[in-house]
Length: 461
Ligand code: ARG
Image (tube, rainbow, N blue to C red; front, side, top):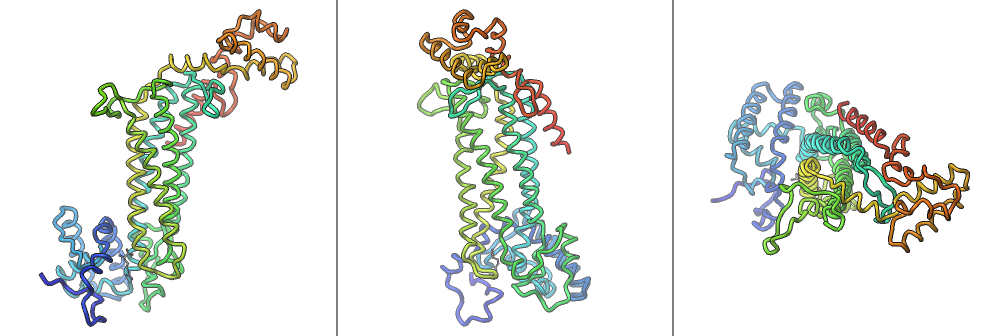
């Protein structure tokens, strides 16, 4: 079948080479923007009619045609064609088939340069909202678990060595803090996504009396991307989004790493929900933490998208260059990866079952309350440096006996300092340790419950 000429083919004597056509076409991936392309075209057409640049009859024809195209695309009946290069020209061509001349008038005072930038921003705005919903769902799951386990003591780590007792709830709230920052960052990014490029046309604006504010209002944009050169060439919003997404993925990746470690029997701190694990086709005993491993791995893709977009932009002269067509796949992939990772994580976190016994066993081996003993001596008047030294020696003694500081007999402990009395038992217990940290942001169960309640309230706001 002979292919139709491109809308720009009049300038050329020879048709574009088949290989070049395939190489330059983007419809295979940018058709994802179709619904937003239609929404943008409708707003543009309404403005054109209001400004008497096209007739009311033309507008009605365009609205009718676009409504039909929207249905065709939704139902999968739309015949996408590589000949028509990209999503914009596919839709415009179909519109012209459906409504004739009016379809050819739609592109008045517009270019694909401002059109694609508009589509991308409209699309990304919706995706940010969808991602925020999933962030909220994951936050709820984390907060619920934190409330449930506000008093469950486990070892806290530095250098991946047992450091001090913390509560499981407190540990989970650290991720709540990270994801709350991710939400705030995305909300801030959304403000800059939410600016209308349409009206910049190819790069220099248009000679028609357009009303950009009207289009912005109709599309729910907060304002216009003012400078026409910047409006068509700016992809900061996509880069910013990828930066937010990469950081969010890094947070998920850190939690993933912990879940992989903790679900290993050597730690045994948590059991992952069975329906979120997979088996091995050869080793019958295996229960593999595939979900956190994959999320940890996928964080690399999103970081990759950020680097790809930064590199894409770094040497582009103003204004639009075809390079920009390469912005879509990394952005789409970052959106999909983050959205899906958040969704699967909400279920994973909701199904996490901590194993108090294993946490306790680890606590009993790490002299986790050594700092508490030092603080105890300080409260009895011993200078902190001396207290530190006293406890270090007691720890060495415990090590030599193959025991734990907390299990040394009182008489033994007294040998290191006469200030040590019977009241040291509570101080050396993990429960006593966490209970004593009852300031804002501390790990005392009461504080963890308060912090969880505050986080829940922020979610509702
Ligand atoms: N498919 C193009 C893109 O994704 C649309 C803009 C094309 N503009 C142009 N002047 N060729 O960027």
